[in-house]
Structures are given as structure tokens and as C-alpha cells.
Length: 155
Image 1 (cartoon, one colour):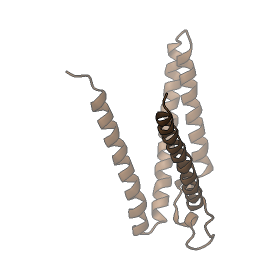
Image 2 (cartoon, helix red, strand yellow):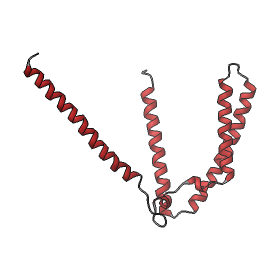
Image 3 (cartoon, helix red, strand yellow):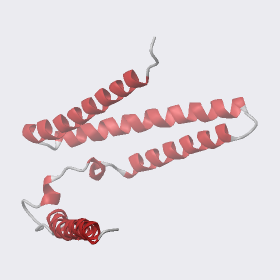
């Protein structure tokens, strides 16, 4: 290999290595700024970040939490029963019926909790909070519909 070609390869290699090292340094600096921005401590009290955020779980009572836990246990029990080699249809139907009952109770208590939450809000807070939730639900539904259309076999 000629000396000139070897020099060219050396310069190209040096440029690539310098680019990679420079990129790592720059990304390290920006990552540090990103962490500082997102994980900074906000002041507590009036106007704090936590105060401005509604968490519906704060309005749940122990009954709602117990219903949510029992519904999840029921769903897990159903999945474990369905995973077994031999199907016990009466047991599975019983689990399904119990799960439906638990879900109905859970939905009722969640609805009542949501109503209590709404009553504690001003109209502007309700518009902001429930409007964002409705938009999120719309995006979720739209995304699922697009996924279903994409997955649908050509007819």
C-alpha cells in the first residue's frame, strides 16, 4: 500500500474517531442538562408542581382500592385457569361471572369517585382535566382504529 493511501486512511479514521468522541461529549453535556431540567426539585406549597396536578387516585377510598385489587386477582385467576392443560368450563364460567360482578362494582365506585372529584373542581379545572382525558381517549381510539385497519387483511 502506498504511503499516500495510508495517510488518507489514517486521516479518515482520525476524523471518524474525533466525530464519535465529539458526539459523545456533546450528548453527555445535553443529557446532563436534560436531567437537570426534568428532575429538578420544585418548591412546595402554593403554586408547586405537585399541587397543580390532579391525581384521581387521591380521591379513591379504601373500598375502591380493595375492589380494584380483587378484580385484578380475579383476572389473574381466570388467565391461570385458561392456561391449564385441561379445561374446567364450569369453574371458568364461575370465575367470569365473579369477575363481571367485581368489575361492575368497581366501575360504579370509580364513577362515583369521578363525580366527587368533579364536584370539588372549578369549571375551568374540570374543563382542563377532563378535556385532556377526553383528548387522550380520542387519540387512543384513533390509534387503535388505525392499527386495526392496518392489520386487516386485504379483501
